[in-house]
Amino acid sequence: ITIRQATIRDIQAMQNANLQNLPENYLLKYYMYHILSWPQASFVATTYDYSEDVDDDEEDDEANGEVEQGAEDENKKPKVHDRIIEEVQDPKGDPAYIAKGEKIIGYVLGKMEDDPEAADKTPHGHITSLSVMRTYRRMGLAEKLMRQSLYSMTESFKAEYVSLNVRKSNRAALHLYRDSLNFEVTSIEKSYYQDGEDAYAMKLLLKLDE
Ligand code: ACO
Image (cartoon, rainbow, N blue to C red; front, side):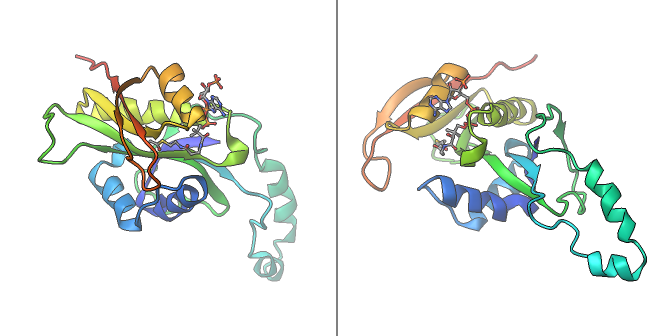
């Protein structure tokens, strides 16, 4: 499993993950807006899906006498779940980066506050959406994705704090924000969600390195 900065090529998969995991959904152009405006604020967790046939060029390979190659490649495949790769990779726009079979199992979509009407003018970030696919939960991925985004917001945009909203009933996310990441509840926003549920508005002060 790898955690890396999200790119424009990831937005479709991020939207798909969001549709599966949350009732708050967004148009593709809203993902694009995030990635283009604040490329350092959004991250994805990816793994390789070898359940699907990764080599769909087998027939070509056979024609080229490359049948043996497949057997060798089999041994090189990393085992999913074997380990979490700690490093964060920067794809730097390499078009080959999304290798065949790579799939997105979690994402954090972050932005800087850019509303000119916003009351608070101090630069601050906002977490628009976070989710991890069901089978990959409780492995620490959401916490890692959040920490990367928060760190990057301070480094790249001098964010002094970060805000987010979460459903009052969302126990798992509340635990993550409050207990693991030290966010504080700043207010309750009545009927924030379309179905009428209230939201906690939460905030975390970020430490700026001088
Ligand atoms: N119950 C209680 N606490 C939990 C749970 C849970 N089911 N899941 C995570 N936590 C808390 C714990 O404090 C945990 O630390 P611990 O394992 O040391 O006890 C901490 O969060 C970190 O857990 P992770 O493994 O990093 O979290 P995970 O990768 O499982 O993802 C998430 C958590 C994102 C909330 C996931 O459950 C999910 O995708 N849920 C559906 C979508 C969602 O609710 N997203 C957040 C909406 S709010 C927003 O987008 C701004």
